[in-house]
Length: 376
Ligand SMILES: O=C(O)CCC(=O)C(=O)O
Image (spheres, helix red, strand yellow):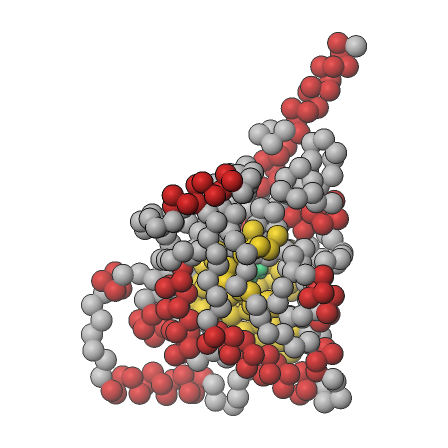
């Protein structure tokens, strides 16, 4: 009897969160298959992740966060960091209290303000550019886009619009995101119950998505902040990009009913990620939106600004089997319809690849800004 009791205690310890077994699940992306927000196995039920999130999570749902390397696409889950700068003074007192009152099981996200832009002085004294220089840069840009934009029909329901967002709009987006990001409900580095953190800074617009519970809500559980609204200028670009993607689909097959392949979507939420030089995001599916949105295959519209990055995607959660596209500043990637449930992730950021003019005009710090628009 005593033997049996010892054996059981040993088994429990081996599965506890502090054990090497648990830590094994947090390997870096590069070493194998890091997931965005993995779910460790439940020591009690042996279901992947059911003890980890706030809500109860079935083995099936948690699979995207687990360590299994190959998973078929299954029903409706998820989405969606380093810190510098001062405390977000206005809200930090609220944050600590509301976090407890919200009953969050932890995660202790970093509470400091994160500014996606550098102070102008850090960028160096900006010399007044001559008209000649400005025109030379503009000519260069125009030449790049000569012969039409190199948009790509990636697969059914998935379109990549290359260099779609104009320079001025990229600057506008950076400035808006900066302004919102240092305010209430702005950028923070989300964490999980055990202290693990996402390798990016995140901010939600329109509705909050909580990486710990993988649920949407009107307020952020960590500090009670209400997410800022999506700026109208952003929505306009999303809708224009969707229309442009319809042209790409039509070019591929003129007989296609475009809205059937890629349903129309007007976003009511946006997850804004900022990746520092060492930022990344493990393979995952975006499937925490409403059942209706997922069933209809309403697309995710993703803007890339700043440094470029490889984007991995595929039908199974396996980095080795994943295909990749390069996402550069100004690119818009759209995936909906049959591609709505792709596994996708960003293994690394290509340092110093942001367009010079963008960095000069916006002071964007080194790294990559990504906005994914969705409809709940
Ligand atoms: O940064 C990206 O391109 C992807 C972001 C993403 O997958 C997400 O927010 O769910």
